[in-house]
Amino acid sequence: MNYNFSEIIDRSNTASVKYDLRNLIFGSGDVVPMWVADMDFRTPDFIIDALKKRLEHEILGYSIRTESYYNAFAGWLKRRHNWEVKREWVAFSPGVVPALNMAVLAFTRPGDRIIVQPPVYFPFFDAVSRNGRNLVYNPLILENGRYRMDYDDLEKSCIEGASMLILSNPHNPGGNAWREDELRRMADICLKYNVLIVSDEIHCDLVNEGYKHTVLASQSPEIADLTVTMMAPSKTFNLAGLATASVIISNPDLRRKYTEVLEDLHIGNGNIFGNAASEAAYLHGDEWLGQLLEYIQDNIDYLEEFIELNLPLVRMIKPEATYMVWLDFRLAGMNDEELKKFLIEKAGLGLNEGTMFGPGGSGFMRMNLACPRKTLEYALDRLKSAFSDQNL
Ligand SMILES: Cc1ncc(COP(=O)(O)O)c(C=O)c1O
Image (cartoon, rainbow, N blue to C red; front, side, top):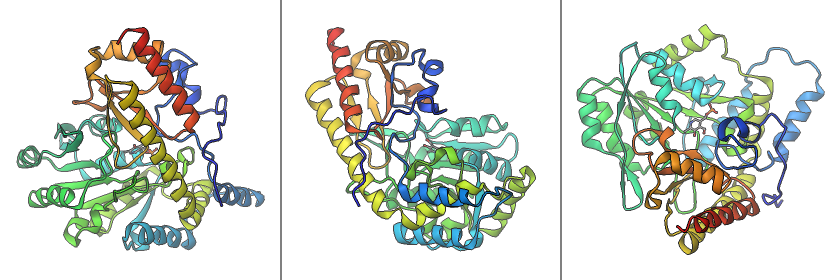
């Protein structure tokens, strides 16, 4: 079957964060929304059918994740990531961000030091500081258009007593599909100082042409023992509104600590629709995902060529994974406030400001490419005109 990713679907007035919060976030309801990480593509038919089928039974009482759910998830992980997961390792979370917060509560104490690697997905910062823990930055280094980890600095932070590292694997917003050698070197340092790794792998299925996702916990039993993995079908299949994710922990002691927090909050079972949609996604999603990745790759290629031909003051960090692209506007010579105003008021674009992603984000913007090509073309034409109107 051929899926149509080019159809422009009006999402306004559907209680959509991306569309219906534009006035609040950008001060304008007209910007082309290329910010929050969900896609402007239809959720695939096999998922909608599963949801409709579940609705036909018109009782929506408390629900559980069934054996068939776990089998579908384990099958997906084996098939797509060559990772064998046991049923009892998998726990629920109503999202990866809630899971990050629960992990901080379960595995650390107030005042503990937790490492993050900016520029990075901003809820990592809040998960640490809003829970009364201390943020420790291990900034990534941008070198020849790609981010790399600073292992010496990481080791220093471990020696100074950090108890946890929160990893974005693949990396948002830098787009790294971290390689095995990079992950192993990082994990060896964490193992040496007994620093727990929380590996946020929500973008694991969205890996672009020529790259591969490495599940950190699959690298060795020692690494698995010190790793808590977070995954969800939400980015891959556009299901973020169903608030459904999984936390995978093979170490029984860590698992007990996590499930205690989950049970204290009474949120361990998930919701009927999240469970039904995830199961359908994991059972039937391969073909759709293959076509989605091709479409996203074409959008990335289009953007790259457009920048090369038309936007000399913009540099693109080429994403190895994810549909989010990290754009470097530093050559344009604007400060962050000027850049924000320029993009909203002159170009009419709603992007994520780089400064939100912490140190290293100044002068950058994050752009969401999970949209029909026509939307991307329109947005880039506006950006080009905005630069020429400014004589830049
Ligand atoms: C790295 C990363 N983690 C987590 C999330 C959000 O997770 P959830 O919606 O499941 O809380 C995102 C969404 O953009 C993300 O990029």
